[in-house]
Image (cartoon, one colour):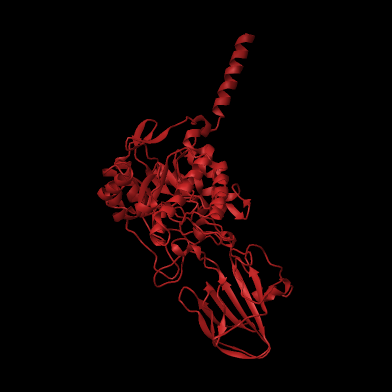
Length: 533
């Protein structure tokens, strides 16, 4: 009887232990993934990758599981994500991989829990309509550094970042039992090569090969890939990495160009298939119809082409993380705080008609089970908030200490990445005329003795205005940073503030500048005389 009782107790204990093992550990069977025979091969069988892009940095961590469930219910089997270097190196040598939506391990675990493969896109250059394309702003302060080039100071900085990243994620590779199946080397480098023809192609390739080698040295042992427009493969391909195409809707052309640079075989993948598009300030919201996206998706499915929707869920550019572009007729095109992207899953995490159309299509093709669409996360109710006190910018300057300089200093000179900069100068003699500020980056409000007299705007090209500064008066120029350019050759010219001398009636204004940094990253000391509204 005692023996039976002991056996029953042991059996009960064993069952209890099994039942309480986390699901992710119960399902921790080690899988395999490789590129072989012109195919993506998972556990020895050819597969197509049906991926959607979602950046964990743009989505609050409590919503990650919900968004991944939404993707799976759309018929997708993988999630692609950028890793933005400057999101994790928050100050020189200071790294955040653990708090809130910086927690990359938490995101990778969530993807694993939801049964999604992961495609990692670590850059170091990311683009993505993100501030400076993911580069930390202070790289511009390093003497002798040239961004995105075979340049020792730059490569040394990249190596530190890649090693830091690898320490966080290399154990999440599929070779270690994790969900990461592929890693991208650089990003859309073919575009940059086409924009920087002043650099020899051999030198460009020397740089991109160095990035691949850094990834290998850091412990990445999974297949690598590149992504470029199909007409830009010559500059973008990297030996040892699968070339994939961005925005290529012609399957025959996709296969032709991949074959040309990949030994005559696939696999064939569109790494950025655009179901929506990005938005700039002061421009119409971009829309792509559900019918158009569904027809192109069907074409890929019929031709067994793998794809990644960029974006399937865009999220939000929180804080000062949005970047900027430029064009032939606009010096800067700042990106919105919203990164909705007209994606199948809206910024709020809701299924759109586009989502429904693609889900219905995918269910007709995929052999795996497509789960039900998860319920919307309830919208919270926020009570009315009454603002009782206000304080003006000039009211808080008494408690701030300016930097005094004979010349104008940029944000970078002031060791400030984001926010605002106030340039102040007192005039002992009256002066009036046209004030020209050719180096405005990016938007300025101009005051005389605390009264607003006008605005300057890099976006519209307005860099001058009439001013009249009386005897013994103060000129203030408050400059806002719209976000650093994240794409194109001008990425190396990304300083903020006032970057060139100011003139009034053609005469340069020098000496006796007081410069206040207003980074908006902490609460300023408030005066006691805050005004009631």
